[in-house]
Amino acid sequence: MENKKRKISIIGSTGSIGTQALEVIEKLQDKFEIIALAGGHNKELLQKQAEKFKPKYTCLGEDGLEKICSDKENDIILVACSGKIGLRPTLTAIRNGIDIALANKETLVMAGDIVMAEAKKYGVKIIPVDSEHCAIHQCIKDIKQVDKLIITASGGPFLHKSVEDMKNATVEQALAHPRWNMGKKITVDSATLMNKGLEIIEAHHLFGFDYDKIDVVVHPQSIVHSAIEYVDGSIIAQIGLPSMHIPIQYAITYPERFEGIKSKSFSFADIAKLDFEKPDYEKFPTVKLAYEMGKLGGTATVCMNAANEEAVFAFLDGKIKLYDIYKITKKMCDEHKVIQNSTIDEIFTVDKEVRENTKELIKLQFAVK
Ligand code: MG
Image (cartoon, rainbow, N blue to C red; front, side, top):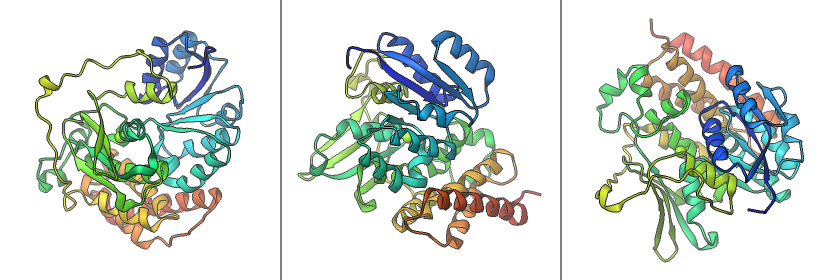
């Protein structure tokens, strides 16, 4: 990295990715200067972070995100908040020529075409934090020679459980992810495999690959974080023990690498065996739906994302069953009239309407009595 410190802000500093990013930065104190920290609602934690890391300023909630993202003092902004609030500030940062370390999935799922076109226009790097995309980013040398992306999926807590078990799953069972410790929304998405669906869409936008050139393979140990296949059939994979510190550190220090929070030494001999299997699309139809909506393009993925998120919240609230999340999302997608080449405002309008209609649908047809 350049000799001077890299100036960074973190949107979502009190969340799962944000707190781990600060652990990375603590190890690399001489490499970073923090401009701003923005937290969601945990005021107490944000205050503690501010005392420790001494940012120029902090903000809580959505107010202030635009200010942070138009502060040209930033070299890079880590967008680690969850949900749609990441979208507008990310666009602001791009238009101010600030590089993005992107952990927020919605930014690309809702407006991938716009975000990537703006990044190109302003010469801004978007470096993925999501472990699968980070793995692919690390594998690619010359993107023109890559034929296929292979995204791995742990399969979540219901991988080898019956559909019946899944139908009767409690919130606690859905939140018991075997490999990764993450926020609640993404953990439920991992149980239904919608998380993989969203990642296919992210990969399509980030790397510019058609959907039929993006494969998913289930790999329960989460050691192979993803892979790419070159035109000559050679496959390059990125592997290591599952830890989000590594992709976070990679994204914020790119293109350099430092010891920082070094991953525990990985031993091929200790692991000895890695398993792979085809995803069961009968049991996890969310992935198929994501491919279909991705291929439709336009606001189809906006609708899928909004309906799924509202359904996940309803599940976490005990209002619906786990399997209803897919049924509700599919119904909303079937009814949606796709708008192509939409503006950001249109995207937010669709998002709002779909959320309202999803809540209504849940109340009328799905609510557990
Ligand atoms: Mg991931």
